[in-house]
Length: 117
Image (cartoon, rainbow, N blue to C red; front, side, top):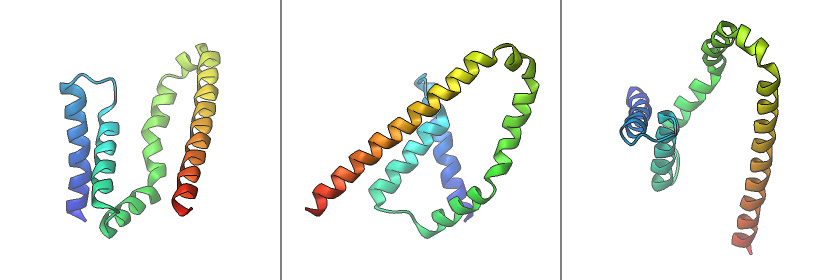
């Protein structure tokens, strides 16, 4: 299990290094997650240990929102001042995410239907 945690953190570190060295406008953890996705796609599946690690992290996901909540409270005056643009941005980004998910699901369903025919 320790090796898998080191692997996940190592991929995150690789993503951070790539983002900073190449001055990419993408956060390092996102690049690290893409690296993990590529490794799992090449492997053809998820090892049991990695699944257990992911489920363990997901079971404690609520703890990861504590720092974000503290950050929100720290900037409450700014949020009170700019509530309208923040609200509109949140609504628009949520809508875009829902639409992108719907289109992706349709695409996946079409590909599955073609493969089954």
